Image (cartoon, rainbow, N blue to C red; front, side, top):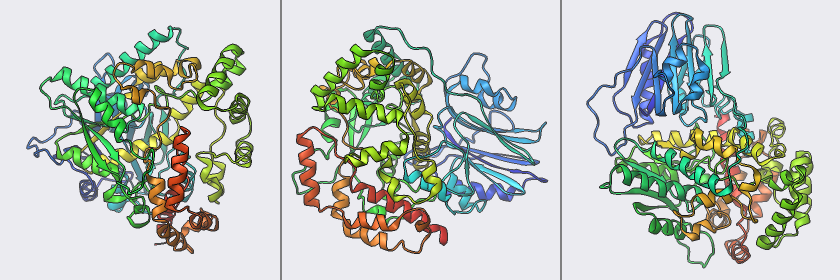
Length: 620
């Protein structure tokens, strides 16, 4: 059952029911939940409540904890043989067996014999779990902001972690954006007793053997695994929605979700597919709207019902309050994801399927393939792919190869300098010059690996995807909605990690195997698009339109804690050099005519200002 867990462990003496009451009130204030089940005994007080979409009638059934001393927020898709539950496996100390579950979970168990609290989280961190520690007690909750609201933790930010986030380098460790709140890491168990706290990995991701299937058979196998991953995530009531950005991943998930729903219930009304629609503009601007791609998917896939969501105004990065748990990116009540979750809940839908995790494994674009071909002596393949790449992009093969090899072999700072010196951009190092925190600089991204498989494993286990999943889980909980990610299914991921580079980059086309796997369900318009523009394609224009607000916002940050992390002089210069809307439109249309992606450009200001405003709270 999908829900939220929370509780208190008294490290000394007995737990107070008042402590649990405070935490329960804080959780319920920021989530849409059904009836709460409580377990209070001795040193521990545990609680669980199922997520309940705001559009559904409240259930009168009191949830019953399956096991005494265990609370579980869990969606179990495929249990291992033996019939044990994740909570039972956790409490008996058989941690490695947690890695055998195909499930999303956040667990808390009381080990009375050892007088310790055990917290565990699923393989990729789909279900969130946070905790805070004082001298006398430990409080944990699915929602980090509840720990602050209940008075167990302060709302002071972890400046170093936020600074690292400014570089796009969300470390996959125990720190959160809040100084006193820790994350249970994905694929880890946290053991807490009266004196010690220990985080133990129960699974270490590793590369499987390379697949030897022919290309066409490998595409078919990938398709079968993704179809199954989607089908087993459709709840028993069949009520699901999906994201639909117009990119390969979300389009495939939406189409397959509609097929899965139709197979389980042909009379079902279809799958609402949420697409963020750019705000109308009086100008003729190319490539700022994903709706044509989303419409093409809806027309091709039976059962996909398109639900446009109006894009939020990027100026909200200046005006709107920042949520204490997730300062980046959050625009409060008018945030795109906030309105998607609210609309799904109003329709009584409890699960939204999303394509997150796709480009980390199943639909990886093949970054590093040229280097892999070179160092493995695959010279004929390398030559063929470089020629194909030139035919598609017009780029000189020597420049392509040089940039690719330098990315993997040169020291990270050297590569950044070389890219900058020739007018190139580095992402996420675009933010590097604006961050003065030494801790963030030391934690900046290093080199990629020498193989596409190593790159996939590194991005899959990095902190960026885990941070995104935390953010969506908190957003959904406010409305009683959970998210599920078929492309993070273990069987999909393990097969995707086995694919060699030539399956990902073929005839100059990135994501080649994934495109082949989805060839008969996606429209050609989506299959052939070289690259998505951006998740929010009109943000550059909107920031340019509100540039005066950003300039004023930067000036207001003088003398705040933001100055400890960000170089405000550089940021002010960036804000003052924001282009006019007319300049943005001209550049956008020029790049579109050349078939090139719109760079982030002014959008950096919105993100940096948002981070700075969050940091400024530290002085309050």
